[in-house]
Image (cartoon, rainbow, N blue to C red):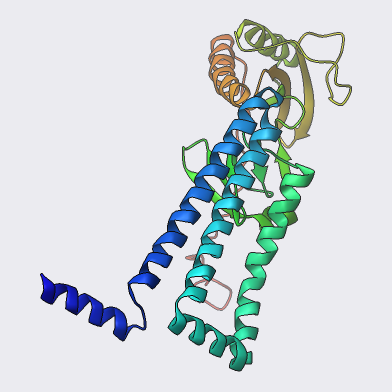
Length: 304
C-alpha cells in the first residue's frame, strides 16, 4: 500500500503537482458544479412562476440555462489552468510568444462568436420562440423549435428528426413562423381538372367535403386572404393552362399540424367524390416526333 502511495506521489511530483494542488482542482470542479446547479434551480423556479406567459419565457429560460452552463465550464477550465503551475506557464508562453497562433485561434473563433451574437439577437428580438413551428429557408423543413443555445438552434421535424442549425444562418435566412401570433392556419387544397370539367359542380363537391371535416374551423376575419366573406368555404379557379384548370380551396384549421393532416384527408375525400361523379382530371399532353432513319435519301444513302 505504501509503495502505491509512493508511486502516486512520484507521478504527481513529475507533473509538477502535489496533493494540495489536486484538492484545489477538485474544489474548483465541485464549486463549478454547485454554481451550475444553483443557477439551474433558480432559473427553473423563475420560469415556473412566469409559466403563464408562454413561449417567450421558455425561450429565455432555455437560452440562459445553456449560456450559464457553457460559461461555468469555461471559467472552471481557466481556473484549473491558472491553478496548475505547469499549465499556467504553458498558457503564458503560448499567449505571449505565439502571435500567429493567437491570430489563427481568433479567426477560427469568428464563426462561433457570430453564432453567439446571433443567438442573443434571436432571444432579444424573438423572430421565433421555443415551441414555435417554423420553416427555415426557402426549401427548409418544417418543424417545432425545441431548443436555443449559444451556438445553434434545434428544430424537431415532422419525421421526429432533430435539425441543428447555427444561429448565424438562421439570423440571415428567411423564416416562416406559423405560430408567432396565431396558430390558426389557412390551408390551400388544389385540384387540377380537365378544361371540359363542370367547374361549378366540382367547386360544390369540394366545399361539401370540407364542411364535413371535423377539424375545419370558421375563417377568422384577417383581411389578408383571398377568401370570399360571403361564403363559408371559398373555392377559386386560380389557373388556366394548356388542357387544364386548377381549383384552389381555402380551409382553416386550429394549428399547422392539424391543417396538414386535414389537407391529406380532404385530398382523399375529394378524389373519391370526383371519381364517383365522373369529374375528369387533366391528363398531361405529350408531343412525340418520330424520325424514319431507314428512308433513302436522293443520293441513295440511308438517312442518318
